[in-house]
Every structure is written in C-alpha cells, then in structure tokens.
Length: 525
Image 1 (cartoon, one colour):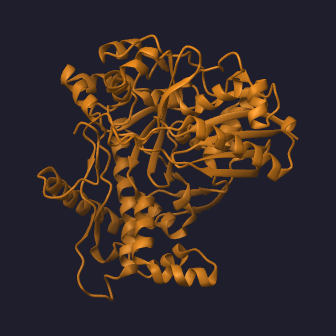
Image 2 (image 1 turned 90 degrees about the vertical axis):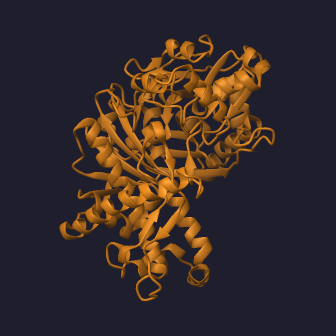
Image 3 (image 1 turned 180 degrees about the vertical axis):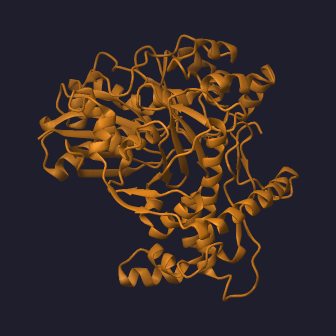
C-alpha cells in the first residue's frame, strides 16, 4: 500500500495528515501555533520559524506513531499553507524574516506605493490579479524601509509551504531546495498571472529588488528529497520525494473535485471563500475580485472572500449562549446542534433582521462597516436568540450570493452547482440556506480535510501514482449529500439581498464618516 503525507501550515495550526492511495484519511495530528506581534510594529504578525519547525516535526513524528505506519511506507510528501505568508533567506539558507498571512504592518508602504502612480494598483492588478490589500509587495517594501540590514542580506523570498520542503531537504552544510509554485506564488502580487511566473517589471516599478526570486515549478513536481538532516529532525526516511504543493484554497478545490472550468466551491470556515475555475487569466476591469493561479496547470480561479462568518458564529455562541453550552456539555453534544435546532423554526428572512458583518468584496477598495444587528423589535417571540443565530447564517450566504454575482459579471458565467466544504458544511441548515440563497444545488463532499487531500493528490502526481489530476480528483472525491434550492424561499432571499446591499452602504458611510469603527479595512485606505 502506498501512503502519502500532506503537511498543512494554516493560520492557526500545522497538521500532518496521512492518506492511502485511495484517498482515505488514515491519520492526522495537529499542533496549534500563534504568530506574535512585534511590539515595535502595530499590526505585525511574525512567523516563528524555529518554534514552528519543531511543531511541524512533532506532527510528522506523532502521526507516524499514531497510525503505526513506518516512515519508509510514505511514498511522497507534499505541502500546503495559508496564502500570502512569506519567508526571507540569506545566501546561506538562514531565515532572516518571516510573517504570517494576517500581518498588517505595512500601511505606510501601501500609501507609498499609491503615491508612485495613482493608477499603479489597477495596472498591476490587471497583470497579476492582486491589489495591495493582501500581497507581499507592501511587506517587502516595509522590510526595505524599516529593516534595511535584513533587506540587504535577503537572497531569496519564498512562501511558507515552500519553506517546509526547504527545511526537509536541508543538509548540515548546505541549504535546502527552494522553489515556488504558481498557486501560492501568484498571491504575492509579483507574478505575471498569464505566464505563471515572477514578473520582474512589477518589482522594479515598486522599488523592490529583482534578484531575490527563486525558480518556479508547477504544482505536483518533485523538486527535492528528504535529506539526512531532514530525516533526523522529522523521522521521515531519507530520500523520500518532496513534491510542490500549493495554496490552501487551490488545493482544497482539488480535494473536493472542483477541477473543471466553470465549477465552483465555497469554503465555509473562519472566512468564507468563493472559488470559481476559469481557463482564462483575464481579470475584472473593475478590480473588484481576486484572481489566482489554480494548482491545476493552465487554469485560474476567481476568488471572493467573506470576512469572519465562522468567527462571528463562534463569538455569538461564546457571548450569548452560555445556557446552550451548559446543556450541550451535559448531553455530550455540540452547542451548535442545539442552536441549529432552534433556528430551524425561524422562517427564512429571520423576521427581517439584517446583519452587517462582511461586505461583498471590492478588492481595490476593500473595507467592512462596523458589525451590527439592525431591524429587530422587542418582541421575544420573533426576535430571539434563534432568530439572531439564523440571521448570521443567512448573512454569510447572502454575501456569497454577492460574490457569485460579482464573478458572473466579470466572466459572464455562473456555476450549475456549488460544492460546499469546511466547517460550515457540517450544518444541514446552513447548507440548505446556501442552496436557497444561491438558487443552485449545493453538494457536500464526504472528505472534510479537502486541502490536505489536495496536497496528497499532488504528492501522488509527483511520483506518477496519479498521472491525471482531474481524473484522480473525480475518482477519489465522493459526495455525501446534495441540497436542492426551494424556489419560493429563494424569492424571499432575493429581496433580503437587495435590502442588505442598501442598508450596508448606509452603514459603511457611518464608518467612512468616522462615526463607527470599521470591522476591517485594507492597509492604506
């Protein structure tokens, strides 16, 4: 039996997951980590490469011990990670500086970039698919401005999934192999989207060095082997192939079988991502939606992101649902189960309650109004805990409707169905609401660790186990259930969406006028 290992470096944790060749998850070990703020630099989120490498190795060792699988049985390893996090190295392969994807220290540098040319951000977006909101451009400029000694010593820049392969392939006397793949590399804002490689002209226009970029290899390419040092630290076998993986959402789409043009997936986690596959790297002329390279060759993805639906749900549970948590603990069930049961009795539209949490994405002018519940009365029969809970669910789905329409406007296409994955997809009620709001069937895959499965498929591709990614994804991914939209309920949600859009603009103006605090806004706005 062939076993494949995926290492997933997420925002809040690192995991090592083993799959068999049929796509069955055999074992998973997860270690939480955190990204510390440098007190000198508000908004910073430093990536602790020493501590996090130890956690990564601990996950590998423990999952081998947990499953009883010998290291020599691991046929290949691939990696995935949060997008946007970057690592800088010196010429000897030592880490110099690293940040996580949530780093927000470079506000001054965004302003500096915009002062170069008012049209620069739009021009670069049309070539790279990225604005200054999330990418590496402002962060590299920040290092240049604030840490000039480190900037001068920088020899290479890479992503965090590439860093794991770099560490596993390093020897005591020589650095590891560092290469970047397009799906994550394209999120830096320094890629030519169509050519799927670095664009030196972008770096030069932004005042960034053009000699720090490693080679690019497509996802699913063997680029190194586990070294003696890597084997000693991780317990993997020396010589195990190391395969380029990809960004978490891109590999997640493979892990749920979304590999054809025109297909789409919604990942319902702390953030909700709407991913739509396209065979064209053309960007939206309005610069309002992100475009990334897919992990599948010659394919790209429109990506629209909703901020915090999962975090809002957790906040509501922990702030207002003490009694449900107590009862759930007594019954040994999830508190969300009790809340969902109550929310089922609330009619679609939640008696008119409107939430203002995430806005529909506007990538080049990205900001979110102060969070609020509005349009409720003091009638406890209608506007109670269950109604507010359902309103949160509906809000996430309505924002996703806005994202589907946003991508449809840019491409002229919309999907015939949606695959729904990650934590929110475990809720039947939330899945049904999503189907009713979007007006298309919503399919729930059996495998919930979609990103890790996508990385495992890449590992198999690299060693020839899976010659065709699309065929492999279609064969390994199984659908557990499908939710069909109700036409009458959709009419209710269409009206609710129009109300939300009008109300949100008014709420955003309150934040623009300084009367309320933004929930979030991009650096430099």
